[in-house]
Length: 392
Image (cartoon, rainbow, N blue to C red; front, side):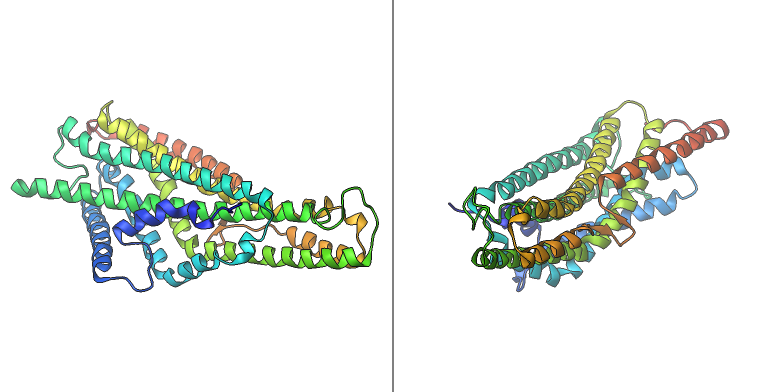
């Protein structure tokens, strides 16, 4: 039976990021470097134009909110891409490390864990990409339907050059959405691989005696204990490899995750506020899709992070279910060491400040509830003391 390949979990992201030149390569060609420069040009160029508009509208929050939601997202994306590029060598080392035979040293019947992860990672990436691409399409149509000259505000009248800025903003948004969605789902796919490997390790530990001692045989012998110890040594090696994989993921993505979480909270609050200022229009539906993307983005990060925490904590239970009572003291000592290590679950954090978990996602929602109340107060003050019309 051919076992699942870890790399299949992020094969789509690799292909997409290679297309735009942001997938790390050891020796990129001139053509590949040109694609990389194009990605950076549109990312930085779009971000600069948005900061120009933000500085121009700094004293008018109603106008500022119209550019803030996308400006903060693009800024966070540039931080994520910068860190990802800076950690290029660590990323390449991790990809090479995933080819280590230790990640394939499991019985064929345990391969369903990896197959399930690859399938779910691919589906999530496709759905997430679909939501993002829908938003980019709406960026194109809503200015036309709402009689606006540009997808995003710009502080200067460009006259006959306005179509060029329209094209630049749309291409820039397309590049950024393409690469940003790939970085997000690449990280979650790698986290999914780590979670699947933890499932496989638990399965190996639970059935470790069954692989050596025939079922129903309760005799403890020195020979079977030696075989069990060898199997346990392989399990310890597998556990250490998973720990190193989680360390790689955190080292490469933690700073980008921190920037993304801060940006998401700001953008979600600003988007909700902007809903109050606009009438029902194509822009309204574009913002609704944008808000859904941000919530899905936060959720999949926290979901996969929670899977790593939960499944690494299950190792202790797996040791207890491994028929340890049929083993000698040396085998029990190995199992005890694995159980003790499992008391400190593996986790992915955002700069060591917060872990990725469903608890964190719930905390973010509580923070959003608080900020929504603050924005409600601001809306009341805005419409009480300012006479500006609702944006359309």
